[in-house]
Image (tube, rainbow, N blue to C red; front, side):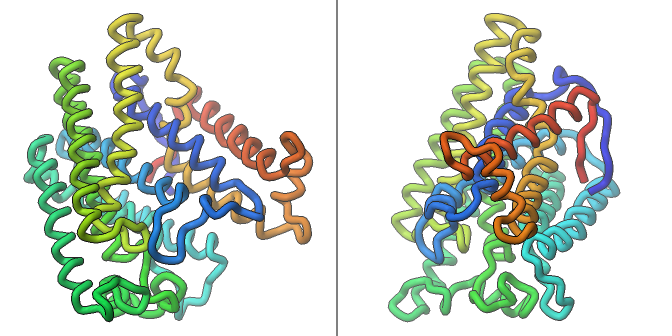
Length: 371
């Protein structure tokens, strides 16, 4: 990850977007820091089904989609985009290897969450050369969701019992052919939750966010109350469309199906909508920008370094759980700061405090880590 950038104050940004990222990160850091035994709702299902943990990364993707609308509202140089994508891909492979503790070159995993994000950045940059408004992005989102669902229906009909399974799914065919042993679990699971198929689903989630980002941009140039209504209507549209598509193809994250993509995106949009309503509409209108900035400052500080805090907290917790013997360093720290006798809660809160302190310190100095 290339170093740090000094940026201007929050007046040039949408406070609610950074605050929404901050809300997301409080959930992400604490959930990633729970030491074993981990409850089932903080684990991914083996195949079908959706747990609370399944929704965390899609929240990041949705809010990143909102941010991409801001990043590409003006033409960004292709050199900058290429640098971002290249850094994310390289660091992503290293992060995946360290996080998964698997370094064999012959079966080194090439996919992962950072690589997925890199492809989304590239796709957004390419599409923004021809589509630069909310209406166009809304059409792209809904049309892609319907077409993607039809593709799943076609594939599902050719599976035994007309049911998607680990032994019969599009990721196993497409990602298996492209990546072989370099896919998730070295191909043993017969699908890749961050492979090409999942990236198509994640694009829908990001695209839903990008549409909302353009609506927010239009609201900033006009009436924010009108923009609030339009974002709320778009959130409801994503939720309703996702619910309808769920009757055709089951929503689940292992393949990031279109119904899951839109429903998870609607949840992320709801978080952004609340932050936008409270900070950029209500507080700014009633109390002024200074009060808005003061109220939002702690969450904004966290949200401005979302990439660092999200991936740093996940990697840090994984390493602390891996080393130190029995008990691990994470378990030792949890016992030292146990909350009401719970080492799990103690370590989760400790992780949140540490990463929030890091974000506050960096924000005070105007330092933001980005690709």
